Amino acid sequence: MHRQIRDNFVQHYSYLRLFSLLTAIILFIAGCAVDPEKQPWLADSLAHPERVELDESDLAIDRVSYVARYLLPSDDRSKFINNLLEKKSGGCSNCIFSSGLFVSNSASSVTGSGLGVGLMALDMGLSVINFFADGSLDRVSGFVMPKEFNGVAISSTEQAQSLAASYSEAKLISAAEGIGYSISCVYGCDGMRRIYRLISVNPSKQAHYIYKPDDIAVLAIFGEMKEVANPSEIDIAVYGFEPKFTTTPGNQWFFSFGGDPVLDETGQINISIGENGASFQMRKGLEGTKIHRDFLKNIYSDSYSFYGNSDDYPSVIAYEGILYSYIVDSSNGFVKYRLVER
Image (cartoon, rainbow, N blue to C red; front, side, top):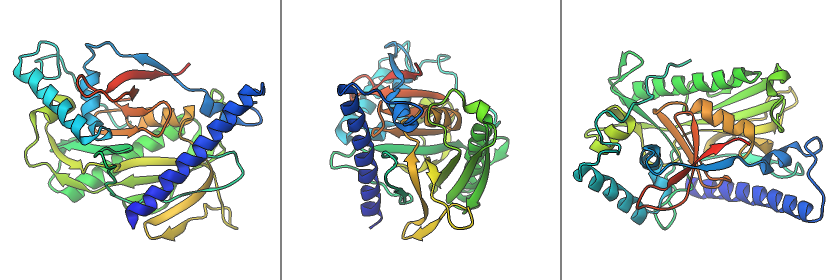
């Protein structure tokens, strides 16, 4: 049932976004440019970042491809991992296994859509591994943690999850306040499924955005973590540390942003409790907008956490504060581009 509900949400979201973009294309063909003042979300969604091709020697190709490998079909995923192992056995001089070439960023300090005519419910299942028939996922996210995190020795999965959630929450708070939003947790503030509200308090910091809602609701999902008994050589080479705790494969550690959420009679976010837990309705999803890309870069700004989405355009993977895009090519890694704002 959880999988079906999540499928319905993703399908509904994709249909709304596709309808919006097709409408925009029709408007352009008809000679009617989208006015950013009248249709800011649509104009922003059409202002795609540039895809800059990575140099074939860039270690990010293999590193980020491995982190987001569950976006690949299972056969291609196996071929890609075998290719990495062949590089290691071949004594590569410029690969993720090369001594002294890889420097981890893990020491970094903690410092929808539619055209406005309807509402979209944000109701995602928690910790649901929803593979397609080919073994791939449309979205991936996760958190990987060493045995000592920010000076604290981790002794249990519960402690690992609590510290990781607090860490990611701090990232969200910093990102929101950095662009002029106040932020407060309004539901489930100590749990695995939390809802936050962001209110614009300094619009001058949002001047460079086309779509910049005054009110944003955020659903945070922090999936369960498991202990890593025997981390692989690839894991250690990619992350730059020995993973001790990690989320399971899937879309397990993410934030979903909704602009202009529906409010109740008291002016608070109208939160409904369903089979999967708390959710809310929003008038616009932030995916595909510049403000969303900036949130991704700031939240997933080190090698502990990652996020990937094949439904977005261009496809996006957020890792170590950089946004990447990809094509499916298992032989040499499928991450091929870095996204740069125009």
